[in-house]
Length: 94
Image 1 (cartoon, rainbow, N blue to C red):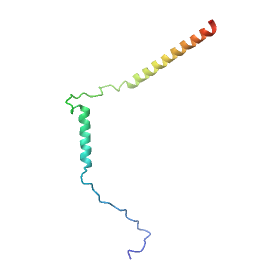
Image 2: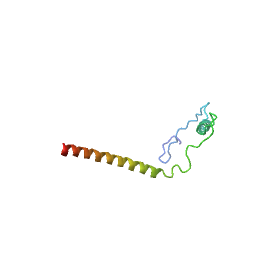
Image 3: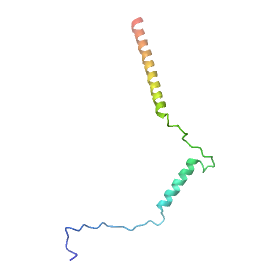
Image 4: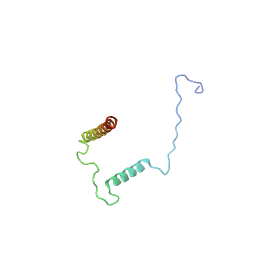
């Protein structure tokens, strides 16, 4: 009776019980993270830890970025005005 097809029963998925012998994923991840942290802190080379981001460094980032963009825009404007003035001088006075 178990050989007859059934419309209400779904097929079971195949499962594989393969476990690699010489691989421990958690241990490898932990070793990789600890070595990365030690390298970032400078402990592996005997250096003293110094944080890369200072307190308040990102606080005025957008203000500094905006100033930099405005400065570039102003320089472009001055160069354009000088170029147009030079072109007008050559056209009218030469």
